[in-house]
Length: 64
Image (cartoon, one colour):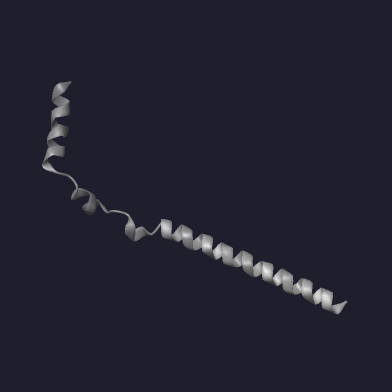
């Protein structure tokens, strides 16, 4: 009898470790998706604007 109860305890511990490992993997995956350093800053975005974009913005109000 003691052997059976010991085996069930080991099984529960094994299953708990698997669940913890899966939870850690999920957390890591979410952290990789939302790394704050990877989002462009305002300075980065300002570098993408060209003179043509500004001219198009100015031309729109004159059409109305």
